[in-house]
Image (cartoon, rainbow, N blue to C red; front, side, top):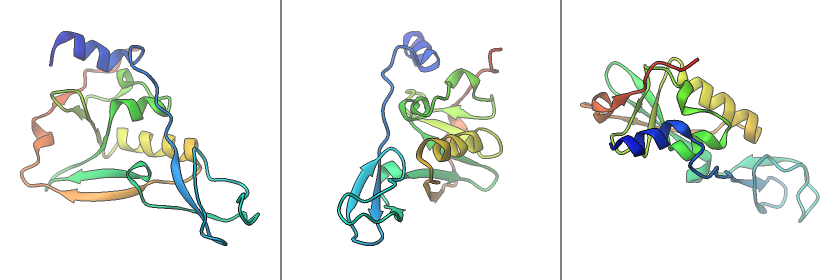
Length: 147
C-alpha cells in the first residue's frame, strides 16, 4: 500500500461519506421500502410494522478461523456510521489494498454493530464464513490509536 493510500485510509476526510439505506418490508402489505431507518408508517397501507429484508446493505460478513474472528467492512461504510479508522485497535486488520477492514471480534466488531443499530434502528444480518487458513491473518494491523 502506498503512503498516500495509507494516509487516505486513516484520514477519512479525503473520501466522501456514503449514506447507507436498507431494504424494509411492510409486514401488512409486503411493500418494499428503502430507508436509512425503519419506517414509521407504510405509504401503501398505513401499517406500522416493518421487517428488515436481506440484501448486501443489510448484511455484514463475519469471517472466523480456528482461533479468531473478524467482521468485514469497507472503510466508506465504517465512516458512514460516524466512526474513525484512527480509533480502531491494533487487534484489527486491514486488507493490503485498503479496501476492507477486518474488525476483531472482541472489541472493534462490537463498536461497528452498535453504530449500525444506532444508525438504522435494527441489527444487521450476519453472514458467517469459516476459513482455514484465513488470509486475514496476513493483513496489516492498525497502528495504536491516536489520542
